[in-house]
Image (cartoon, rainbow, N blue to C red; front, side):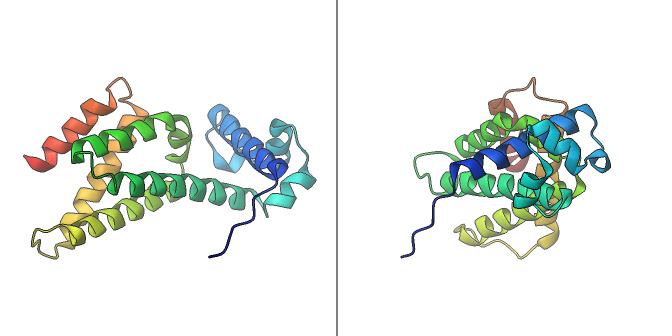
Length: 181
């Protein structure tokens, strides 16, 4: 078994500073085209040389941030899937709690079409895997999977953008009853 080399704490800190700078700038002006390496570096309190040590360009930075968040989300979902002591509704509530904690990042990322598309593909794969692992004999209805996935993405986007005054438990109940009823 190979052991992964631990990243230099300075590298981790610099990347986190660039990530926070991007979100800060996008909160001020949500247009991705307004981002420049100079703006991101200045906001992060770092320089362009440091930026280019970590990223090729702004798009590379955005891609890495998106992938990082999707990987974290994936890890959270895998943990929840394997949690045998939780009901489906409890798992959904914990997932929504996780999304709530990261709501500021998600709010910005949802403005990027690529994130919405990646989230759709990620959730679709999760739903398909869950359907394959269920003991029920379900038909191969890919349209139903797409509809369910699109509705989940839509609900999550709506909740992050407009409905955060509803608790994660309330939203989980609504989703649960929508698909059970």
